[in-house]
Length: 127
Image (tube, rainbow, N blue to C red):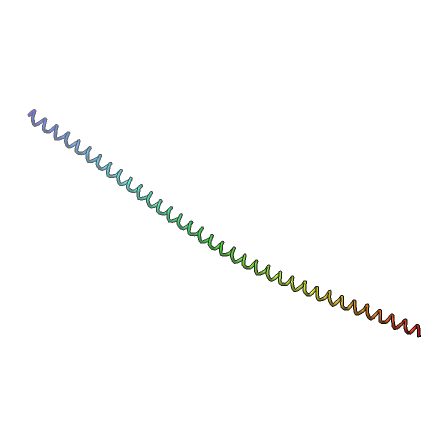
């Protein structure tokens, strides 16, 4: 009887220990699954952040490239406009010089005609 009782007690303790062990194993597996999920979530977040960073870098590169292109285009347009303006200024100065020359020629001709008229008046008065 004492042996049977001891076997029953040990069997009961063994079953209790086995149940505790299975429970601990279940908790451990659950914890591992949760950690794996956190790891997966972190990895996914990291991947998403890396992808977003790459997109932003690309956008920055593209916008920098577009900005450089626009600056080059505007610089070119500005140089062309400046050249046109200088050309127009040169034409204007040339035109002014020609008008001044014509004015000088006209003034000289008028002076000569006035002098000739004065000579003729003098001659008329004298004769």
